[in-house]
Image (cartoon, rainbow, N blue to C red; front, top):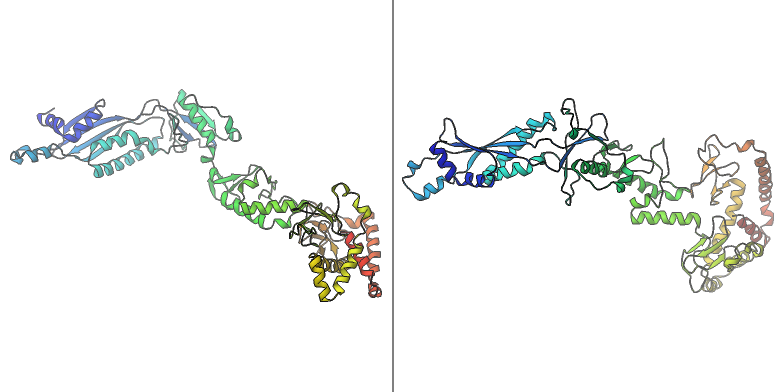
Length: 517
């Protein structure tokens, strides 16, 4: 080493500090040709212990090969320092001290060893990235130590870290997917482990704690497989990471935006369904999604409240004839529900008292099955409603004060009886909710606008999937007999005008019709 080089090494503050920190590393200083400056070089070995690397096999999207590097990567950093001349300073002590604080103005990053386990096509690209970042740091900090520190600790950040656990001493980095001749196939123990990351995706809780670097890599890949595998949404056809979507119970995949939109749409029309409307959107599947165990986790509080009420009203439909509880001590509005779909027994979900919708009598819990034997099918209540409708306004007001429910009940019983008479003659009733339906055109396959039940307009029977081509009621002898009875019943209604002056005819007829609901 020349005297000038030795003087530079001993007195330059920047290089002296770097050598003090990286004293164990190989260093070298030489003068720059055609220049009075100096070039110092430093060799840095990147620590790769407890670090694993994984890349996707080209032929299988859910198969990854994991490895560790046999020999750690080594970088060579070369810093260029500007020239200085002590004779030109005329013995000025302050200028002389500044000469020894000269900082490098350029840095060159070179590979001294590039691991053979890494993709060969990325060697130059990775080096350019290190060179660019090193020049930026040197321009900002004006210190060679900052560049050395970056290369030592941040070189591996070129590869994206995966599944980092702050409590673990291991690390896993993802390498680019395997392409033709990107990876050199060395037959050693570090390159022989291939992992099927989705093999135990539903049993991630059973994965044991890692015992080695490769074991950690395998465990991390299997636990975080959703951040690796891309799936295509069948609705929007976007290919996204599995972690940004939802796997249905049937194992089909939907992105979160499409899945949330699908659920919201189903909730908005849920009143039209009698069965679980949450089905797999794929036509070849259509498997049901469990509502409490799966769908509930993805619904908002408002939507879940709607679904919960829908399920409740399927089992206990609301009572439309009475707008409030009959109990004077309760009187809760819209609180009466039927005990079953076709029952005339209603109960208040507030006070839990039970009543008969037809005769308006209290019913004990032990007498629910026996009440049909003593119920008058609403004959008395129909006469009472008729008297109320014919009464003066003063008497109606007094009656309303004593029986607040009489307004809605009398109106419902009168209109319901007339509507039923018309429906029996001109249309068909839904076998589930008894809503009247009139066919204007088309086939006999009907869907109730109230409860979405599929039924046959000709015979009134419910229809079940696949609906089409499986129901032929006109060929059944039992249906023909029912149609004859229906014709006799409709024939009787043709002579209703003869009984309009009979004060008891409509009460009795409506009671009979209402009792069929």
